Length: 234
Image 1: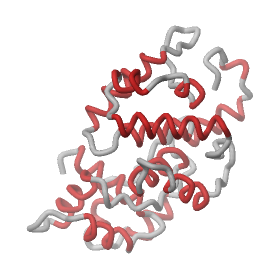
Image 2: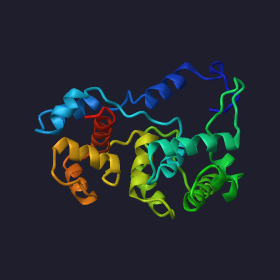
Image 3: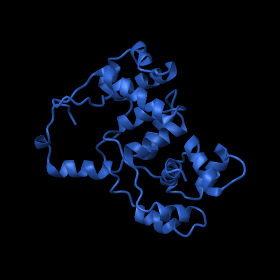
Image 4: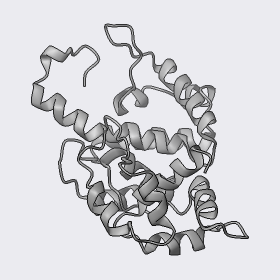
């Protein structure tokens, strides 16, 4: 959506489709809940949190840049950097609201500017690289495609320095609503699993990966339920 666009400039169907995607209303959670509802541990959690959907970003670039921002830091720290990043670019709608930039806006920034917004050197380099690749057409994220080539996109992203499995799977979840990325590298997912299983020792990445594997093709949605478990205090 362009910053100068108004609701009148969009077809109702287009706005409706965007809202459905962003709210996760097209996610087949009924199928998921039916398939895992009888699981001895997860089933209880799913029944308690029935109807949980994963919100999706307006654009895949926003999801990917948010994933890069949030690598190995707290949510609070990531939100602070995001706010400074948006203010740094200063893109405003006619209403005065600040808008999230696209890749082209980011390419106009310098490493120094991104560092001042709170990005580490490596994250700033990765964000600039991704933005430049998108502008040049080297990286195509297929925003408008209803059934994007997830595996192709995943392989492209994994080749970019500074992007690993967690960043890819989180970006695919928040960018497309892809519900099968394994988020075993996520600290909050591991804490949630530790709490769910009432395990004596903390869950490591390998244990979490193996446990999530049983719930293919719903691994990212299971992770979302574990996030909710943590955020609700158990």
